[in-house]
Length: 441
Image (cartoon, rainbow, N blue to C red; front, top):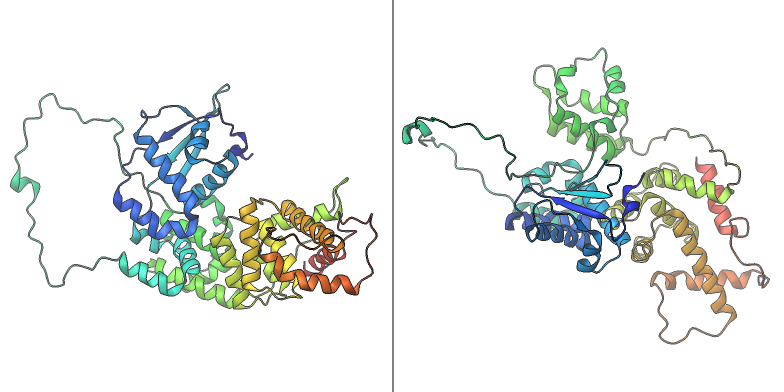
C-alpha cells in the first residue's frame, strides 16, 4: 500500500529530529544533494528542519500547515517526500494504533562530503547529472588536505590533565539525548539482494562468507541496483576484487563493477514470456502495465536490440537523474520519441517532453499516454479549424514534431469526423508501439 495516499489536510504528523541542522549540513545539501533532488524537495526538507525548531518536541500538527506554508497541494508534497525518502534524508513511519492517523517524519542529516563521494550510487548520479568538470570542481572544493607527513602526536591523555572525583551517588544516564542522526545514503535494504543465491554461486571458490560484513553487503546491494547485476554477475566481480587473506577490497569491488557493466551491459537479457491479458483488460492496458513493471534501461536495451549507444545511455541516465518521472512514464516517453523520430532518440527533444510531463505532474504511463492522445486531438482540431490564435501557449516540444505530423497528415486520407483516436486499435502509431514491444521481448 502507498501510505502517502492516506494524506489529507487534517492528517496528523510529528517530526522526529534529534539532531541540529547546521550551516555545514546546509552547504552539503546545496552542493551535493540539490542537483539530485531539485529545489522544491530541498526546500521541503529545510522547511521541516526549521519548523521543528519552532514547535514543541514531538508536537502533533496537521498537514494543512505544510500546504499553507509551502503553498502546494499534498500531492506535490507527497512527490517531494518520495525523493527525500529515496535519497535517504527522511524516514517515514505511520502509527499502528487502530484509530490513529498519524505520520512521523524522522529527519536525517546529509552525509559528509567524504561519505557522499564514497557512496557509489550517489556519486555516480551526481557525476551523470552535472558532468565530469563540475563534479571534479565540487570534489576539490569539498576536500580537505591530509596532515603533513613525518609528524609525531604529542597530545596529552585525559588522565595526565584531570583527576577523577569520588563519584559518590553518580549513575550513568540512560536517557535518549540529542545526537547526530545522519543519513545512511539511498534507502536500500540488505534483503534487496539474494545473498543465498550468491553464496551458492561462490561454492568452490576461496571467497569465504566471513568476508561479507554488513558494510560489504550493503555495497553489493547498491552496486546490484546501480548496474543491474544478478548473483552470477556479482560473483564475477568478486573474483577480481577478493584475496584469500585480505578479503574483499571495497574500492576494487566498485571499480570491477563499473568495468563489468561497461563490458557486459549490452549482452542478451533474460527472456520474458508474454503476459496474459486479464479478462476485461484491453491489449493497450496490458501494454501500459508492462511498461510500468520494467526499468528504462531494460526497455532501452529492448528498443536498441541490446546495442544502445553512449548517447542513448546518457539520455536515460539524465532523465532519471534530472526528473522525478517514474519508470513507466520514462518507458512510454522512449517508445513515443522512437516512433515519432523514426528511431532517433534526440537528446534535446526527449528532455523537453520529459520536463513538460514533469511540470504537468504526470505520474504513470497511462497518464503519459493520455497526454499524447490529448495533444493529437488538439493538433487535429487546429488543422481542421482556424489557424493558431496569436499568443496561445503550448509546450515547446510540440513545435518540433508539428511539421512532420502535418506532412504525414497530408499524405493520408482525411479522417472521418467521428473517428476520434481513443484506443490503440484506432491509432496505428500506438498499435505499432505495442507490436514492436512484443517483438523486442
